[in-house]
Structure formats: C-alpha cells, structure tokens
Image (tube, rainbow, N blue to C red; front, side, top):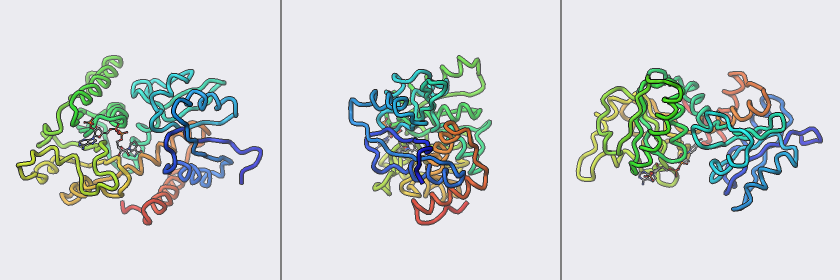
Length: 306
Ligand code: NAP
C-alpha cells in the first residue's frame, strides 16, 4: 500500500509501455516487505535532462534507464561507476551523498543469471554473436568473469572490431594479458576450434520472427548448415532474447544436446542488482527462486524446467 513513507523508483525510457520492470520490482518488494513503488516514466525526445533533474527535485530513490537513453544519460550524472564507463552505458541511477551515480546492472544481471543456471565462465572460451548495445555489456561481463578468450562476431564487422577494442583497452588498463579478445564476421564461426559458450545478443529471433537465427548467416545460402559440427563445440547457449521463451537458436542448441537459456534471467537479475544498489537489501536464494518462478509464470504461463 502506497503511503507517505513509500520510496519511489522508476524507469526512464521511450517507449515504456511494454516494460516488465514494474512487475519484477513489485515481486522484490513483496519478497522483502519493502515499502516501494516502481513507475514507468515516458521521456519525450529532448526531455532527458529534465527527467534526470527530477530525481533530486522529487526525492526519488533511484531510477532505471532504458532504450534510447542508456548512453545519453551519462552526461547528466555526477559520477559513473568504472565498469559502466567501460561498457559505455548506464541503466541504473542511484543517489549517493546528494550525487547522481550511474551503474550498469545489465552485465551483472547476466553474470548472476549464468551463475544461477550453473554456467561457469571462469577459464572458458566465450563467443558473442552480435555487436549492438547489449553486446558490449555481454563482452565486458565475459572479461570480468575471467573468460580465457572472447570472440565477437557480427554482421557488420566494424562494430565487432569496436567492441574488441574496448575490451582490449580495459585489459591494457588492468595490465591483464590472460584473456584473448578477437573479432570476426559471422561466417567465420562455421567451426569452433575449442569448446565454447555462445552468447546470442542480436535481435534475430525476437518475436514475431520465431524461425530466424543469426546462425543462418554462419553458413552460406548455398550450403547445408552443419549444425551438428557447430554445436559439438558448444558447451552452452545464452540467448539474451526473452520473447519468445525459446528462440530458434535455443531450439537448435537443445536439439543437439546443448544447454540453452533465454534472457529472462538476465532481465530479472539486472533488476535485482538495481534493487540491491538502491536499498542495500540482499535477497536470499529462496526469495530469488520464488520471485523468478512468479515472473516466468507471468510471462510464459509456466515456470522453466532446470
Ligand atoms: P541493437 O543495439 O539494435 O543491436 C542489434 C544487433 O543485432 C546488432 O549486432 C545487429 O547487427 C544484429 N542484427 C540485427 N538484425 C540482424 C540480421 N538480420 N542479421 C544479422 N544480425 C542482425 O540491439 P540491442 O540493444 O543490443 O538488443 C539486442 C537484443 O537483446 C534484443 O533482442 C533485445 O531484446 C535483447 N536484450 C535483452 C536484454 C535482457 O535483459 N535480456 C537486455 C538488452 C537487450 P549489425 O551491427 O550488423 O546491424
């Protein structure tokens, strides 16, 4: 029940109609008995600065930021967490000692989702398909998880090269020569030389394109896709798309005996991480399990078999 002591949170974006974030944060309030409310705020083009200024003006406790403002918002913040700076995008704003501090919980959410699913990245070879906004957080997550190598492949090779450069800059700053980072065209991934974890970060396969997969681009139109030999070297697939529940990429992986998870866990855990930053409250494992099950039932009508 909202009252005079309710802490107000929200999401800045354009559009915001279809966001699942209020539902997720309400689950977290329910689990922790926290007196909070989470509201989607539609920010018209050109109004971002005023929306950010309202945080202090209205004593909001914290905000999430989504498309198309994750990069632009950084110019209105007082301080940016070093990892968010490396990723080049903020999706969470916290008020700390009267300063607006920007974080990126997308990478943390994905990391927690991998942990939750029992997918270990430490010492593993990671392949990131796609080089859009989310791929940079995914590649940085692989780096911070001590992956042995990261290969970024994309239709537009220049964008893959750019992400490769960002991760290599982080490596140089950290004097870290352990993780080999390379890039290439999608077609370069016909065969994986070593057992790898595949992150699918393109928008290919998203609702309503159920029969599309970026793996189609790996094989030339004239050749018969050899998924059996491709998946022989894949330890797990994480497709960050969460609608549909199972993309064609995931289905192909499962047909070849490879574990495949979708992006709902990433979405859920990025919200959990934002909640933790804002409130300092850490959820217990049972609370997380219960809330994630409720989210799966809300979105898919059933919970996921693990
Ligand atoms: P984005 O910045 O628009 O990037 C799109 C990516 O998809 C680019 O790499 C693009 O390649 C590739 N792509 C698009 N159409 C293609 C096609 N026909 N063939 C091959 N590649 C194609 O998008 P984003 O923000 O990174 O989001 C990507 C996906 O991640 C979306 O489905 C989004 O819903 C999902 N996502 C999920 C979460 C989560 O919490 N689970 C969070 C963020 C995003 P080019 O560079 O060649 O154009």
